[in-house]
Image 1 (cartoon, one colour):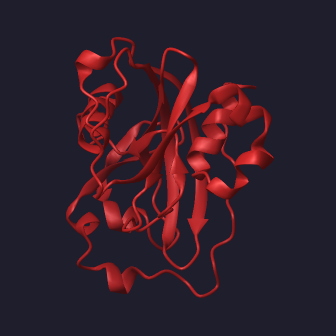
Image 2 (tube, one colour):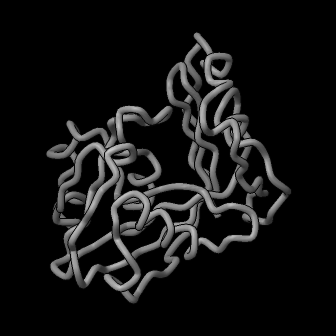
Length: 198
């Protein structure tokens, strides 16, 4: 497993003091070692502030039958990478929950995608990365990559989670990153896509 170089934090520091009442402060994530072995649970807000705590996460790439990927824009109320485009959902499993079960839950919660719309949800990769978000926090995750192809592309997105959405030719996105730069892609998605084509 490789770890991408971390970007330096903003000298102004994080905004953790202002986030004591943030909903993430009431949730836990699974701390892990570099090989994704569990090391107990940690507070989700603590894991994403200061220098962060390495923890388990996932991103799921959602495709249609024509090889297009669904890009979902993170809602403007998100603490980290608000307004950035993800491909397609990302979150954290809770203790004792499989990556597949966690992904199934988030697909339904964020986009209204139910299990009867697919039958091929699978883990395809895993990597460690660390990225700072200026003045707000950090992602330090061992991230599983899952893929799924929808037989039914009907969506019912939650506006508290999803700001916008679009279907994009996956090969074209990878081969022409300059054409999509204005979208501001989430770092974990860019890493997952780069690795997928390596």
